Length: 273
Image 1 (cartoon, rainbow, N blue to C red):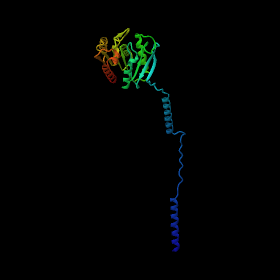
Image 2 (image 1 turned 120 degrees about the vertical axis):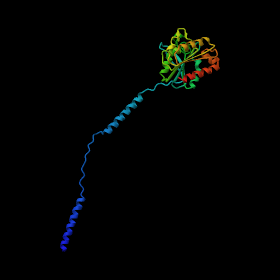
Image 3 (image 1 turned 180 degrees about the vertical axis):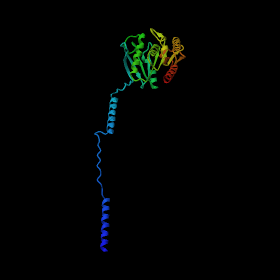
Image 4 (image 1 turned 90 degrees about the horizontal axis):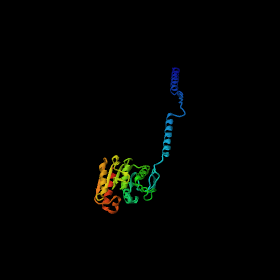
């Protein structure tokens, strides 16, 4: 009996050992080999992106900044080779080109130019050929070429807006140039319809830009010309006939009250266009 029990116990122990041995057995892990290319697709995209960024940076470095005009004296040349002297007041990219009358020079505009500069505009004054510091001989029939040279100078200096304003013959030249060049507005101040062989009366109908005509009631010929030019020109247009008799920029010397009115009228026109 005892012998049988011992055999039974041995059998149970052996069977249990086999079960434990089977449960504790760990199969070797299957080796997985992942083949990769030298450059993963993600790495190639990143590399291409970096190369494009480098090219963009190189292109930006190569772009030359447009020149910024500085206050002070400048010189530019007309199409027929005349050196024109000018002066810049203020800074920015909203330009006003002031053309003087006879017999004055650009200095007649200096105080008004400073006024416009103080109100956010950059202003160019200049001497017509044969006047002041400019070269050549006085020749009214060609002063429109001097203004066009001034306009080209301004355009090269990254102008956002350009307005022309001229007194007497300078206003006539401004109207002539505005009839064939793109500007944002033109102001004729005591300007004749024509002077010598320079005529605005046959050109003003071609000006699409806003126009402002100013003259003094007592300056009878100028007032008559202002009304004629106004009536001949298309919209948009404005006219202001002032009390007093001063001609052009003489108003700043002789009629200070009217001068203040002119300053405000011009500034309102510029700000509104």
